[in-house]
Image 1 (cartoon, one colour):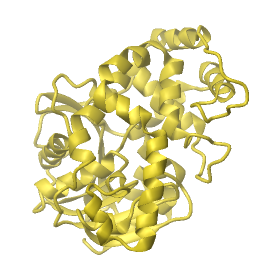
Image 2 (cartoon, rainbow, N blue to C red):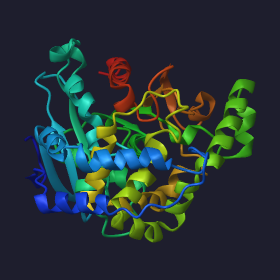
Image 3 (cartoon, rainbow, N blue to C red):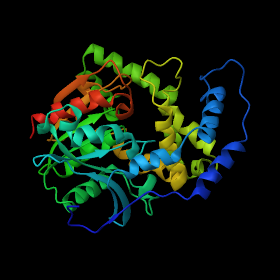
Image 4 (tube, rainbow, N blue to C red):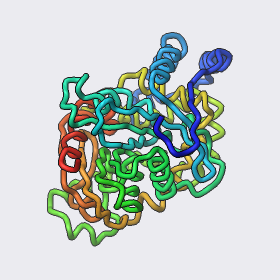
Length: 383
């Protein structure tokens, strides 16, 4: 591997005893009652979760997904005192552009499995080899195989500085960045701290551009955008309980998440199933995909640590308008995303914007093909 930093090859090899313990805990889940007829209006529906837990225990095959991850080159390194796990998949094309992908919460690098092949080897996937990328996909500090964070202060700016150090350590002096959900916070920060090295930033699920940071921002918007901001505000107030808990008292939550796999699954499902899968228009996520994310958090014991990112980065990500980034920025807005262009332009140099009537908030799982095409189209102008 091309590298100027101290890295160690990494391979996932979960002991069978850990998988047996997970199955045993799932079998012994202590189920709460549920009010009749409430469906999803009070939270994750019990009948849905019962069926999903049974599938997790008896039908889901961790070894299949472990092997799929292990087919990609993985490494660990230490940056700023923190263990960092990352995928590093180089393209066979000599002129490929380095690209760092950043996932969100409650995701892992597994979400990128359907992106990496088309991005690194477009020739083999019916694309133009001129669109090739060398892909680096790190696990966020505190998430999954990066392990729990060992100190406070791991907000979006510190993560961005670590990502820049990672890319330079791998020998990439000029590179692009892409991210969704929390990755849509971290990736633009890369452009702010290293504009001389970041050629462009592409984001989906741009969470910082759905509501104004200041009431005066509304004066900058069109009538349609102001109406959209109002709808976003109402939707957020109705479903933001998870974020309030994680951004204020994540340690209290950690005890429950680390002790009950069914509870951890329910907590993550608040986003992965769009609150009510019977009513949503978003593309359903394959249940084995989000079970793989949940299983990774469970096996690494990092659900509580991952929740801390909302406290560590909350002041940087929400409630204040980020400084304007000078780096060209592309936005893909999929069905269910609330990004508003007028708000995005206050903090980003928008050179590309696409609206999609498909997919969903987790586009790498819900619309990987259109997301790959949008990434290619954006960076095509910057190579």
